Structure formats: structure tokens, C-alpha cells
Image (cartoon, rainbow, N blue to C red; front, side, top):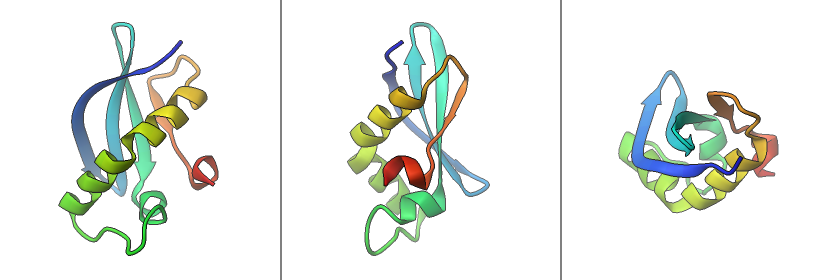
Length: 84
């Protein structure tokens, strides 16, 4: 069950940054809390555009983490422990 990147679309809402991957024809949403992303780089992002750029820079790492956590669910949540 390997996930593949679906698109470059990113959603930011309610303190969560989400991007999308696919398992065959099923879309999987990957959620990363903004505070977790903010801990990835110094200084932390402060704008929506900065979060989008951060996701783009770290997409490969986040996608690998999501693939490891994926267990046939529709949403994968990446936590600070996952990125430690």
C-alpha cells in the first residue's frame, strides 16, 4: 500500500495544513498541525504562503512519513513525534 502524491494542492484550515496523496483510486488527506510544521524550520512560518512553501520544501519527507503511518484510512495525521 504505497501512497503517491496526488497533486500540489494544499489546504490550510482550523490550524491544520493538509495535502493529498493517493492509494490507487482512493484520495488520502494528510494533516499536519501548523504548530508541528512551525517546529520544522526556524524561524517558523507566519503567513499562509510561508506554510505553502514549507510544505513544498518538505513534501518528500512528509509523504514518506504519511506512507509509513498509512493503514487504509482516509486521513493520516502527522504529529511532532513522527518528525522527531
